[in-house]
Structures are given as C-alpha cells and as structure tokens.
Image 1 (cartoon, rainbow, N blue to C red):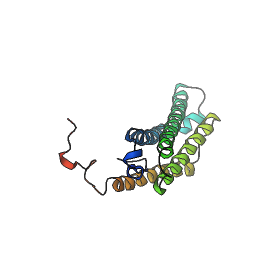
Image 2: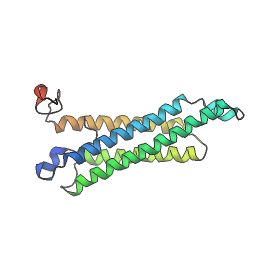
Image 3: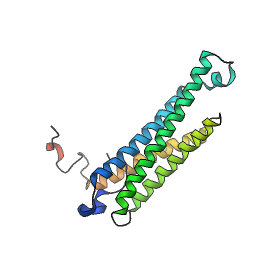
Image 4: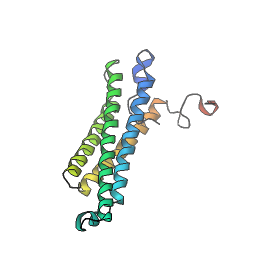
Length: 172
C-alpha cells in the first residue's frame, strides 16, 4: 500500500531510495494510526463524568482517557513529521516533487496541525469541537484515498499485486 503519495517512478532508479520511501509511507500510516488511537480514547470517554462528578475513581478514569488521547495525538504528530522529513530527503535528491506528492505532504501537515491543536486544547482542559474532529477524520480519508490512487499509478496499474512479480512473487 502506498500512502506517501510520492511516486517512486517519478524519481527514477538513479535517484531512488526505496528504503526512505517506505519509511515515509510507514510513518504516515503510523501517524494516522496514532490519530485514530486518540479518537478511540476520546470516543470511549464519558465526558459527563469527567466534567461533572466530584473527584472519584470514575472521574479520574475518564480524565486518564483524555490524557491518553493527548499522548496519541503527540505520537501522531511525531510520525507525520518523520514522514515529511523522509519525503523531503527524497525530494532533495531528485527533480521537483509531482503534484500528488505535494498534495500528500500538504495533507500530512494539515493532520499534524489538527493533532497539535487537539493537544493544545487538552492541555488547556478543553476538548475540540465535533467539527474539528470530523474535519480531521475526513482528512485521514483524503490522505488514504490519494495514497491509494498514487499506489495504482506507481505500480503501472498492476492492481492485484504489490509487485510486478504478481502472484508468483514469494517472500519465503
């Protein structure tokens, strides 16, 4: 799967560093995964208990979920920054990045901004509104859709397999 959105074919064999490309892809996937880990923590949180009950085990448990969400958002941000760094390493060793690559990197930066905003809000004792959460979730879907489109393009429309080796490619 390609999430990076920066075409390996674009750089050509002479400039290609597949390890760096895979690291970028992997970091984007981790960034999205950590983002969803944060959303899962917030989804499981009973905000009414966190806000309205006096100090109790239940309240502390609910506040811990919010704190865990902030940890996931921070990890998401870190992974997205790693992805951008790896993508920039590829770009500096090749011609200017293609439009898919530029769009992908812009989307990563936007998701990183959401994660940082969510952490800032949590650190201030607030939760982001649903419009922000839904906007960020929509953004993750746009990142994945763009990456899948790029993946098909990169593999020259070999839609059924990850390599040109097709079904006979073995990893054992």
